[in-house]
Length: 105
Image (tube, rainbow, N blue to C red):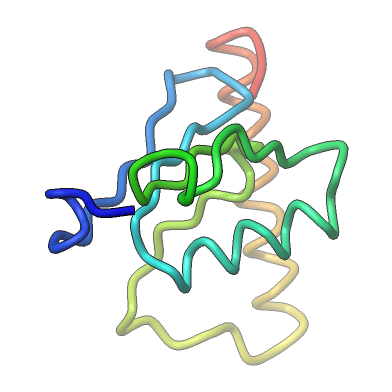
């Protein structure tokens, strides 16, 4: 499993705006574990296309776009039920807007 890429920790997440799926290419072992756990938990939604041992040390997989999270590490989590509900409503408005403008989320 020797590869010039093994010295690097290259990871890639790609998707097209409005698409339902993300494609991930991962070289980090802890991310392989996360994807494998998700594949066991959601076998109808997560598909591992290539395992690292057969793919030059890279895992290649498809996941639903809603599994993608980009977050502000300095932001404090919502503390009250009102704040949590307000966040849910904001997300719903964003998703509804995306569906109206782009034909689906």
